[in-house]
Every structure is written in C-alpha cells, then in structure tokens.
Length: 344
Picture 1 (tube, rainbow, N blue to C red):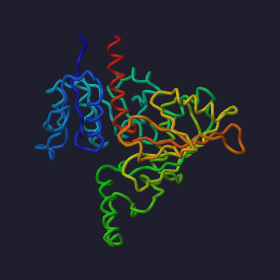
Picture 2: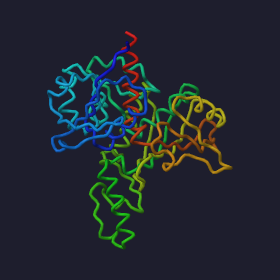
Picture 3: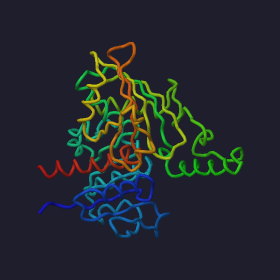
Picture 4: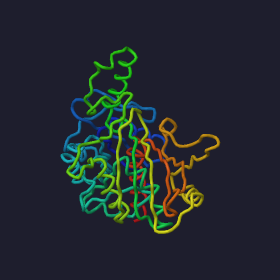
C-alpha cells in the first residue's frame, strides 16, 4: 500500500495558503492528514478542505513533532519561515518554503519542477526546498525549452503584476480605492500597501530600490533565473504593479545564439509541460489576466519575430500568480518529492 503523508500548511488562511488548500483538493495527492497552521491570532478560525471544516492550529515549534508532519508548506512571510522552518526540519519534515527567505541560500534548492526537478534531490542538505518568486516561475517555464532549442543569450522583461502579489491587504486596498472612485472620494482614499494610489494607475516600483537603480523584485528575477536554470543569462527586468486583482503578465524579449522562427517557437512551447498557447490574432485571442484566474497553467501568446534581429523573439505570457506563481508550484514540488522518495 502506497504511503500517505501528513501535510501542514503554515499560513493556511492567507492568500497563498487558501490556494494551496484549493490545489490540494483538486489533485490526487497521497494525503493522510492536513494540518492548517497560523499564528495565535487565528485560533478559533477554520478552513474548508475536501468537504470538511478544519480548525486552524497555532504555529509553535513543537507542533511539527506533535502532529508527525511529513511535509510543511510555508507561506506566512519570511520572518515566520526564519523562525519556524528549522523546527519543522528537526521534527523530520521537508519544508517547502514560499517566502523569499531561503531562495538565494547556496545550500537550499530553488525549484520549478518543469525546469530543474533534479534539484529536489538535494533537499536533505538542509531539509528545505525554496519556491521562487511568482514573476520568475512563469518566466522560466517558458525560457527552459527555448534555451534547450536555441541557446538563450539574453532576456528583457517587463511585468504587469497584480495587487495580489502584495497579499490580501493589497487586494483590499485596490477594491476600496475603486469604491471611493465611484463615490467621488478617490482623492481622500488612503494608500498603505503601495507607495502611490493603485486604482486607475500603474506603479513602476515593486519592493524597494537598490543602489543599481533596480528594485529587489527586479533583481530577484535576475538572480533566481540564474540559480534555477544553472546558467548565467543576462536579464533586465522592469517590474510594474497594475490595478488587477490576480494574474501576472509579462512581455518577454528573448535573444538567442542562432536564428529563431516564431512558428517553431510556438510549436516547441505547445509541447512544454503546463504551458498553453493562446495565439490567434484573427480571433483576438491572446493571454490576459482575467482569463487565467484559478488556472494552473502558464499562457503564452503574441509570439512574433523581431523586425530587425533574426535571433530575437517577442511574446506575452500570463499566469495566476497565486497558483502558478506560488501555490501550484509548491504543491508540484511536493508531488515530485513524494515521487522521488517513493522511488527509493
């Protein structure tokens, strides 16, 4: 009989935690028991999972041993991971961390299963596997098969990132500002989640600026891509917050070591795992945030050759950042980990 696993979700009532619950309920995961965890402030609250109502338990250093947790999915912020992940590891659990805390730790694997599943095997070094940044995940899913085909030389990307990337509070701020707009009170509306008004606006800043003029979010895409793909690819990113609730979009310009053809690129990506081509210009079909919500795939369209450089291709990609960019990738890591452990 196949083994089943006790799985904890740290931050179960957060935006990503709720999506992890949803993804797990949709797949055939070898689950024995699910344990939702959060801070003491959430005691008394519940989550719904697979037709059952489960009480949220308090996150403590001892809970992982008490509940005999095998897999701990962390999505409650970097400071929480920094404090509690080691306790989960000491109790025998593998930690899949969705925060930025461990991503660039040289000893911790940073994994997108469609790109570098082999790195999951290194988990025993630290007991931790890191989930990349949301904007990085959907991008490298596209970069990997094209790099294998054409030898990727450079990436230029501009992102259009939804407010959910800033959490529930950020989404609520957009909704409140839109309500204030229709009540003719937008000028009085506060902004705390973002440095400026987000309703009816775009903000070319995500996270803080660094000395090189780029933001932390932009440099995450640079550094994480190198670590995931095991290749130093020159990459320049401009990350922009836009007034949508869910779904990150990215405009990619890719330069290769040889000539590329848009039709060939379309064919290669159509065969890549968890990528869907939406690219019918006559029918005005292309990826959009509104059509990717609650989907577990990355959608690619507007694939076209550059007008001047035969080694360059352009495209537009969209994915649900709470799923593909967070929850779905974390669950896929867990699935692959279970598969690899079962092969031993």
